[in-house]
Length: 233
Image (cartoon, rainbow, N blue to C red):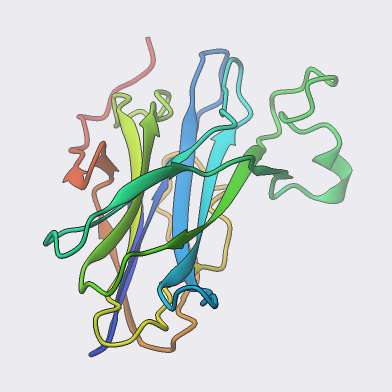
């Protein structure tokens, strides 16, 4: 499934938000990351007006051998270098099990290891939240996270890292927030069918907003080119 990207711009703020969503085929092969998204909220403190809460959501499909670690490192920098960046460990995540199953099948989803069932797909989400105080205003602050590796069962992507970022422009005012998606990236779709996934982007600042399909990124904002469609051996 193609990556989806939501971007909001105004005279005072640019918000950039990326989500990487991949549809899995379920088998016994080991896989890793399925999707991720990030958003930033303004949370001023008495010590600094340039304080923001960064929320990172990372998803894995519950397949044989799939893992999702408990550590995440957040990076931030000004693209133009107007002020120094930094990075911090995001601490302990909050964990949730997510699925689109009806109540009859939730108890026997693939995320319930005691049942031994793999035919009912579900996901584990780790959510990290970190409050960051920036050294001051810049027009191009970028918060980012990267990790390896993507779900290698995706038939038109040959593995690779997963990268997601969010951008703010606080050079005109400190009170800025980024867009975010209001629908979890875990849809059920039919194999070999064309699908439109309404991930419902929204912007708490009510700026103009544009959504566009883009190639996913890896280990930085470099686009990851899709491979020729391949079949499992």
